Length: 376
Image (cartoon, rainbow, N blue to C red; front, top):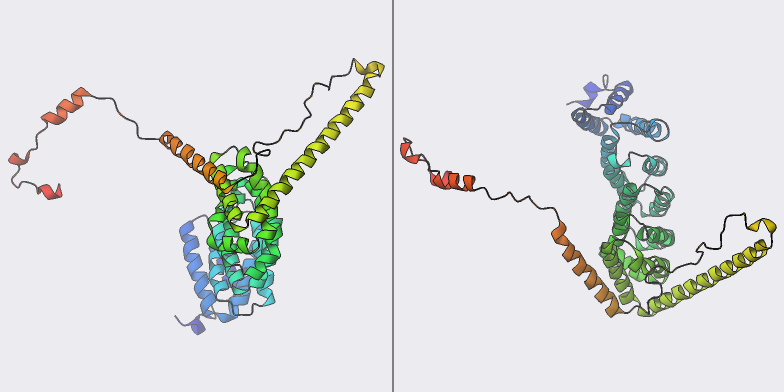
């Protein structure tokens, strides 16, 4: 192939028409288009900026207008290879592409179709320039799903990939908003979200970052972990929370005890405030009883306004041995539930079938060449 001979045919118009074909519903066609466009990008240096610009335009239209395009995953796959070849230091044009084009792709409803390719592109950028970590993580937190739990799990997956390549200095810039969001995820009633967030405590590099900054992170995470250690409906989450609490306790026992006491004091203050509110409403109701029309109004005095602590809030001080025992109990309970897994159905005993199998004889003696028993 000679690029100089093809220049008169492969121009901007040709590239634009090629990019329009990426909206095809046939995945085989999109796969060949991906290979073709990637080779054009590699051979024709003069068309590179134009190709990137037109891909940007496709993404802008997808994000802000149509929210439908069949070839987003393939285009991101090409961009992943292109980003990998960017020279250092990164140009401002490329940084703008990350912040204004790639990150807003997280907002689209159909994120699951192209999320692995998108996450790869983002991580490639951060490996090239660690200083982009702070704006990227803050942007992800800004776009964090509120009501779409499967999408939230995807964000947690991507965030762990980012934390795997993050520099310790960059981590310190984002750890407070980051772990505030993780605390919300741990408290999520959707067990897959809580489970995925708690799996961060199985990542050795993330645990080393947490250990170095435990004085900041533990006070943020402790209330959610402590509160959900008993109140969460899913027992698997209990075991993962006990594991996280145990690791925090091993890091800094003194800080852990301080967080425990502070949490209990805050809970006590909350109960006192609730008691004051109840007393105030009681006085309001007593005053209302003096009104002649009180008897005809619907009664409110039977409503239960008292606050109840979630299970585990009023527990005695947590000890390492207690956490270990609780985790062991959760594992035992989980093992007991294993036989509930679906098994193959067992057919009833059929005497006719058993007799027919016993009476069956091979026809080897009637064959001109007996079969090889090792190959039967």
